[in-house]
Image (cartoon, rainbow, N blue to C red; front, side):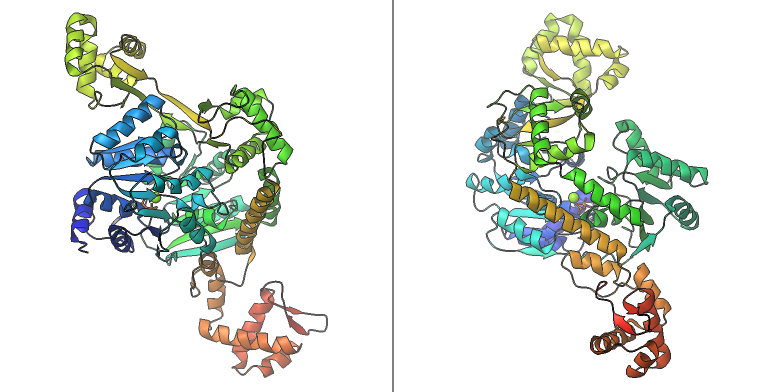
Length: 639
Ligand code: ADP
Ligand code: MG
C-alpha cells in the first residue's frame, strides 16, 4: 500500500507534513480492511487515524464518541476545513435526526458522528444499512469494558451494527487508556474478526513525576509556583476549592484564575483562552478542564487532590509537556486524602435500596408511567430534581451512574444546543411567500444572507447576531422566527442548555428493577482495586513512578531517572546498575539471615561505602527494618 496519497491528505487539510508515531501503521492496517485497536496517550493524534483514511476512501466514516460537546467541536472543525460532516445525538429532535440521517445517506458527507445511545434506536438501525460506509471509528473505546473506569452500556450495542453493514467495513477502536484486561475486552465486545492491537508507548520521557507528602498544601504550592517557570494547571476536586486556591495564588503574586463546569460558557471560554494564550499563567480547575485543550507548552500539572484512578491521573498529568520539553507532574498527598478517598467510595456505591428510591423519584419527576418511556429523551435539571425530592447530590449522581451501568437509562453532560432553523419550503415557494408577505421580506433576506444550507437541513442560528445585524431587538427576531414557523415556512427549534436523561428501557416496577448484586459487588471491587493502585502510586517510595504507571498499562520499562524516587537514588552517586546489584545481594542475604548493618556490609561483595549508602537508603525508605538489637530484616510490606 502506498502511504503517499494519505500523507498528501494530511498536508492538504491539516498542514502537517508527516505522520506522528503509529498514525501511519494504524492507517495502513485500516486500509487493508482489518479491524484495528489503536492505543495512544491523549494528545497522541488519534483523530487523524480515522479522518485521513475516511478522506482517502469513498463513502462515509461513522464515528462513535460519547461526549457530545467534543463531537460538536470536531464536526464544526471538519466543516471549517470544508469536509462535510454531520452529528447525531440525543440533544436533537426526532425530526432533526431523521433529516441528518437522510443527508448522510444522500448528501455525500464524509463523516457521521453519532453518540452511542443512538445506535440501538430503531431509526438508526433502519437507516444505517443504507449508508455507504467506509469505516466505523469507535473513539474512547475503553467505555465498552464493564471493568474499565468509564463503562457505558450503550457501547455494548456497537457490535450489533455488524448485522446491518457490509462485512468489508473495518472497525477502528481508539483509546488512551487501556489496561491489558480492557484491551482484550474491547476486541471481544466489538467482535473483532482477528486480534489486532497497535500501540505507542505510554512513556512520557520528559515528564518528572513527583509526589509531595505535605500537610500544608497551600504554602507548598505557593512556594513551588514562585520558583517554577512557565504555565501550568492545578487540578482540585471541588469547585469551591478551585476558587480558593486561585485566590491564594493571586494573593501571593502568581498570575492565576479558576475554572469549573459551574461557570457560564462564555466565561469558561474566556478563561481557557486567556490561559492558552499565556495571559493567565496558572489555571486552577476541576477535571472539567481538559477537553479539547491543545496547548503544547504546559510546564507543570499539579494535583491538589488525588484522583480515583491511574487512568484519570495519567490523562490529566499527561497534559504537561506536549512540546517534549521537560515538565513536571506533581501530586500533593497527605494521609487524610486516603481516608477521604475511601469515604467518597462509600458515596459512590449507595445501598441498592437507595438506588431504587432514586429511580422511582426520577420516574415520577419525569412523569414516566410504569411500562413506558423506552427511548424517550428528557431534559433533566439535576438541581431541580434533588431539591424537589430533598436528595443528597452526590449519592443521587452516583445512583444515576449505577442505573446507567445497569442499562436502564443514559444521562448526558449538559449540552449547549444553539437555536436551529430549517426551511420547509423550496426556494420558489419561499420567493412567492416573500412577494405576498412584504413584512417578512427583509427578515428572510437577512436569514439568506447570514446562513447557508437551510433548505436541506437544520442550521444553527444565533438570534443575538441576527438582532445586531438588523438593528431589531432580540425579542423581535424571536417573534419573526416564531411567526415564520407557525406559517410553516421554517421549522424553528429555540436553543437551550440542558442535560438529558434517555430511557433505554421502559419504566420498571421497583421489584423488577434489578441491580444485580454480583455486578454491584464486582464493580465495587474493581473500583477499590483501581483506588488502591492509585494510592500505591502515591505512597510508594521505592519504585520509579513512571514504572508504576507504565506497569499499570501493561508496559515494561526502565527507571525514568527523573521522578522523585529516582532522583533520591541518583543522589547516592551510584549507577542504577550498581544500586540494583547491591540491592539484589542484600535481599538475598536477608532472606537467609538477620545480620546487623556492620555484618551485612561484610557479606556483600562491593565497595564498603557504596553498600553503606544502599543500606542507609533502604532503611530510610523502610525497605529494610532494624529491630531492637539492630538486626536487619527485609520489610515484606513495601515489596
Ligand atoms: P488524541 O485524540 O489522541 O488525544 P488528537 O487527535 O486530539 O489526539 O490530536 C492531538 C493534537 O495532535 C492535535 O492538535 C492534532 O492537530 C495534532 N496532530 C495530530 N496528528 C499530527 C501530525 N501528524 N503532525 C502534527 N500534529 C498532529
Ligand atoms: Mg481524541
